[in-house]
Amino acid sequence: MDYKESFLQYLQIEKRYSVHTVRSYLNDLDQFFLFLTAQGQSSDPLPVTSHDIRAWVVSMLDNNYSAVSVHRKISCLRVFYRYLRKEGIVKGDPLEKVSLPKRKKSLPVFVEEGALDNLLDSYTFGDDFAGIRNRTIIEMLYLTGMRRAELIGLRNNDVDLEDGSLKVTGKRNKQRIIPVVKSFAERLKEYMTVRDGTVESANDGWFFVTDSGNKLYDKYVYNTVNRYLAMVTTIEKKSPHILRHTFATHMLNRGADLNSIKELLGHANLSATQIYTHNTFEKLKNIYKQAHPRA
Image (cartoon, rainbow, N blue to C red; front, top):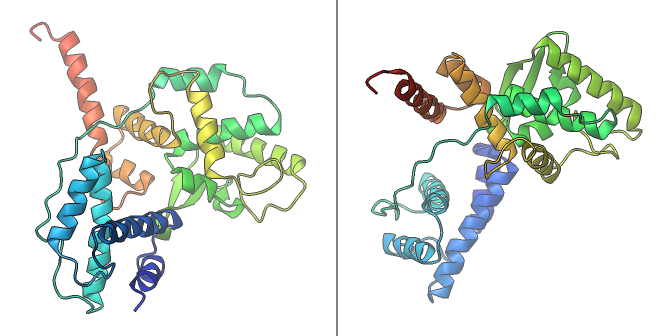
């Protein structure tokens, strides 16, 4: 039986995982069975034991994999063997007695408000299509908190400027509505006008497109964000996801409640959103130390 092929269908159809997640899971699975083969064992998943998985964990740590990477790869195996048990292919769980290294908890990195204000209020992006598109990408990520894949997947009919809202399709095809302030709605209208007057070829309804009218791609968005953030901040990581962290942190710092931020970000549960409270608490501690006479 081709377990990998049936697992692929399970991830795509039943779990409705994104293309990126499915690819990562299959790569992790391949890596595990290549490890077994290198140890002189069969690549059949049925006889795998907890000893085999612990040996893989040790091997990854010996090869300087981070604890986060190890957890992610073992998470893939958990989903895989949960699927095999669900299908009645295996009875036991070889991961039941597998201990994993502790993950170092780190606070989400974000850009200071003043730095982004400086970028969006003082920097000239240019009046041509590329300049207006680049500014709109930065603002879209910062003003909505959406993920890079969600921005790229945005379609024209997802943007309702009359209602002032965006329909965003997130992980596992879950949709949510994000409000758009009037000033940003004007920015989006300007972008669409310039885009439609510049790009001649059909774009299949994608909201963000390249100069040739094709759907925008991951690397372009990453490079754009990285280049402009480098002008206003010295933080090491300058990815589109940093603007998502920044959106959540700034909202929380200005009084937004955690549940509202959870809904705007499209998190499945509140625990994923609560990490942003740590940034706020650190800010409160600093204010306390500076302001209290006995601190």
